[in-house]
Image 1 (cartoon, rainbow, N blue to C red):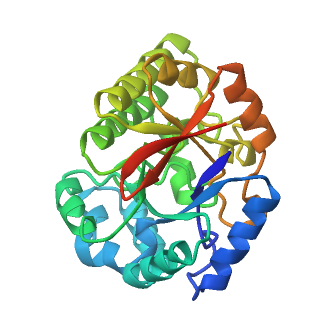
Image 2: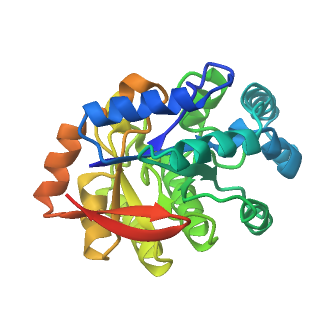
Image 3: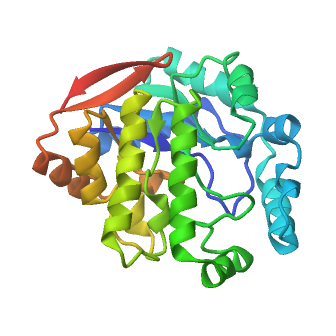
Length: 291
């Protein structure tokens, strides 16, 4: 197994200096869990460059409460330097630690081509693609009361439709290698009653991954959320595999103790689908390891 989605800081915490020894601790924990390789994939919005390059993108949208919430979110998160992050992660890789250097990149409408050009200057091994917000609404920020109120005031079908559209746009943007937690929209168990619609949205995401030659992660992070299941759902995973979409495995850990979290459940699931290899990456090139 591999854990291809790891962070350095929990969301409530400000970014702090990390070192080669920090990543060595990550690797020791991974080795104790029987993992062959890890990917450090910090959020793009943890870095000062996200504000420098994007500006206040949230001001393009109307809701004033969400505007203020997003502004505070970026002020809290976007404090570390991406070049320092990469230099330490590269040092860890070059020292022989079983690590790849990655990034988790959100979808920023109308900005992806510009961001692609910026990120090509850095030697990433893998970039995860995510959708964590719709316009300026952080739909999965369970601790933000402003964000959570939107769930009560917005049509559920429209939310799911917009999410799947954003995932399709992300897949087409040539900005990532792996779709992270691909059905994150289910995070707080606000599921559509019409399962046919869920299947339609899932199919669109799976077809996009296939069309643009992306992998998809099977993540245990959902077990730590109200939905209490992995990402993707059983049905979406079946669609990914039917479309020959390669698979990675991930915990989305934001602390060392969550590395490899619930990987026994993830292993049982992918074995159920007869998955016998996982996608790995080096310098944005995909290869495979056997399970």
